[in-house]
Amino acid sequence: MTDDDKVTGRLHGEQPDPGKPDGLFLRLIYMVLIAVMLSLGQTVLTVLTVIQFVIMLVSGGKPNPRLAEVGTDLGIWIAKAARYQTAASEVKPWPWTELD
Image 1: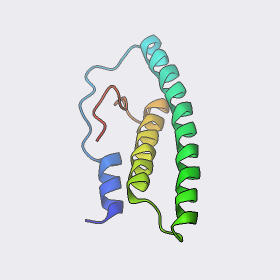
Image 2: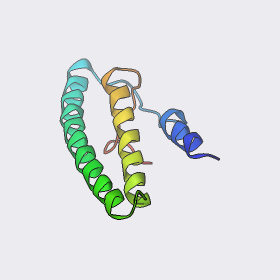
Image 3: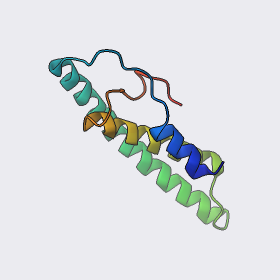
Image 4: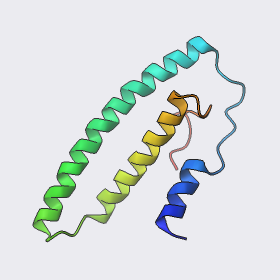
């Protein structure tokens, strides 16, 4: 199984049953909270990018694999959050569901 297959499975694989849909007002509250979390996620991504670049400068172009994995996890979370924000999914991202 390739890394692309793993990421695709995490994004589009089996999703937990969200139960009955939230009312529009409650969904708005979740959307605002997730929007704030997405903003924080963008900041974290920027910091990770700078740190990874410095590591690559020092190590002759070799990236830190654990930092790269954190970036992948963050990217998947951002994708799941965007799916909820745009109503492509009723499944809320972490912390309301498991961070797989």
